[in-house]
Image (cartoon, rainbow, N blue to C red; front, top):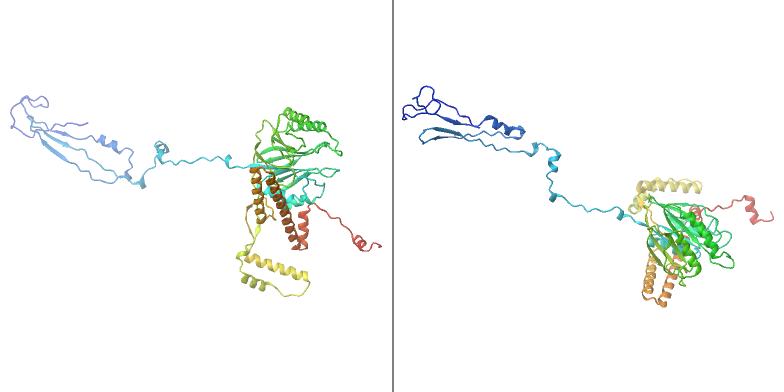
Length: 512
């Protein structure tokens, strides 16, 4: 808005007489000129100062230009015009006031965003691997079994016909001494030789054995396995065939097996029934049809569709609920020394993480030998006395010097199953067995099958030989204290009978 002010006339008598319209008070014939001054209202400038921080403004002297125009019209009016002053405002980022968060979020540019690929956590997890095998006695076959567990990265293993004994058995110690991270659970046959079932499982799996009912027609081991907050039941069954010594018929087995299924079918979690049933399941014999109908009545399904015996029969079975998506993959091979094939399973159960151990070691590679000799020579004290005392003093001095030059250090490592006797030479022989097996599978010729059997037999013999030399070297290079420790590892839970001096004397002098 602009205001107009009236002032006295600047010129008198120089203009002709004309009649004015307004602004005259001194007379009708009085003539005066009107000077108009246009300016800017002060309150119109105040609106530019609202919300402006004066610390962010630089001091600029306003420059006002006044332009005077003399009108050439008939009114002879002088018009003075003042132009608006322009200000330039410089902003400093250091003193810039932070705006609210909503101001920034409204103006996000999608071109400045980086796309991050989403990786599912479920895809990085690994499932459980297990195996089933009819060993026909584990004696002289433990090495081959351990090599298969390490090669196939199995978490637990189900064995039938273990031929183990009740109580102290060297097979148990041989397995646990070769696989530190595994435990062996077995159910031997009582009152007779042969038979028996066993479960070899990693220590990070929580195993709980349940009391077995004394069925007469078959043996079984009932285990509840807990892995990564998932629970499933594993039943390992061995049914001996009918013979002169075993008088239990197929009908007796079906009756007792139906009683066991009535108990198992109501359990929570997944259900895995595996073992040697000694049924020719590939045929349509009456006993096979009865077993198949029994499984269907309990909503169970059998997964093995290939021969598991050298004679072409399907004797080893894998049974689960038909509604469970429990088995992801099933395969078989003839790697182990037996007339039964080895069955490998990949279960839809998440594998728990491996155990962590903290072994203590010395870095003897970086040890300075000359410095060690000097330190040991200055710490030893020459004394006379008993040989045992001198040996203890020497061991103490060596330990103190090693603690100062190469102290013990702990390192967290993942505990993995490994056979201490497994060498690179065995690995090369194993590759030859694999090549012979692939050639036999591709050609399906009898000659290639026999070559594969010879390679496999040679490989198993090399395993037993290497294992024997390893334990022999341990015993020969052990002192009296280490020897007892080795015996405890190889024969666990072994208690030697204690005898008195008189009993020892009678061994050499029976007359006393």
